[in-house]
Image (cartoon, rainbow, N blue to C red; front, side, top):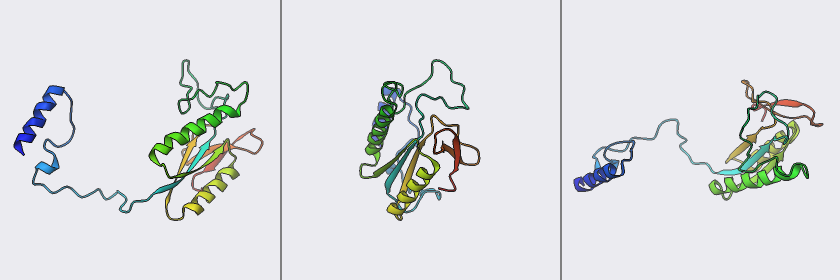
Length: 175
């Protein structure tokens, strides 16, 4: 055991890497591993449903943010301004597909529901359907409100009205 420990120490010095944590791994000490923290969930849940809510409002900057040049413009590594002149819905479809592909790496068996530039009723309906089909399992709601104001301190996100002329606050407690 000491030989292995000395070998590890020599390798650390050779690489000039910084290692954080105990000097000796738990398997080399006589200490019992510490119990998991009390805040950790005891039972494991599966994330079976993902709701992707995208309020991008492509071509419109958020009203409460002063944009500096140069600034980041990519959404899921896709430039939303590319091809907007031909079809404003095409970039948002590419972004949704890219987002699904990214989540597929972590949750390959999860089912996806998307809401693109939704109204309050659309978001509520989707959340209720996700909760109903997931039963006792966990769901994940991904909200991207790039074209909307920032979330409020009261826990409200912003979505569009039916005519897409105003931003309407939606309380997360209602969901």
